[in-house]
Length: 294
Image (tube, rainbow, N blue to C red; front, side):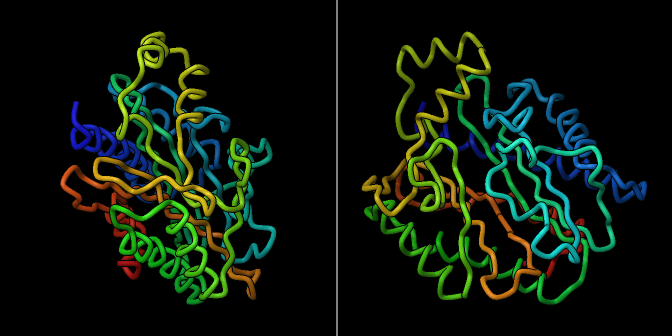
């Protein structure tokens, strides 16, 4: 299987997450629901599990089922649940008593679907805002712009260290900081993305056997350990036929009322060097009246 074919699997797997979340959000809005974090997670899982091409749970677990849902409002300030360190922490798992307000609510939704045949992941994460506060709208638009600027900077031949340093400079120039915690990384505050395993390199025989056994714990450990992180100490070179995530989580240094925002995107470098930014966000932006971000 060629890298381009594997990139298409990554795109398709990510699209499953986007389409199923879009359906959940449409149901919430059509029926004026006020679901909890846990209820949105369960609705999303139900839709995802209709697809037999992916494992029933995501690879990034905990949180349970490989799904993160965090709900806040534009009034929460520093205590907002969106200002999290890691989705793995138990207190950040989807809660039964935190409900969505579609007047001024904010959701961060993340899923980590995994293709059964190849083990290729299609992680998807998006911040959705239902309100109209200008300072929050401006911050959300800026955070998405940063993702696009980093993508524009990427080219084959650059190192991951150069990309990480560029992103850090960009974030700092806007008086933002990037609060990251990664339980599996020795330098988490420095991580701004990671490779999509098994696109650049084929699976080993041992890895193929792990995938065939369909043991969730073994598969998620294999994927986690296979990643190469985009960080300032990493000399991995951007090559044709690879893909990696771009996932900054900027917060406003001088305004604690503005919550952390994340748009978990994927940069794919095709075999002939063409770049592609994989987002799948536009239909959700349109549904929740976030057209300003486009």
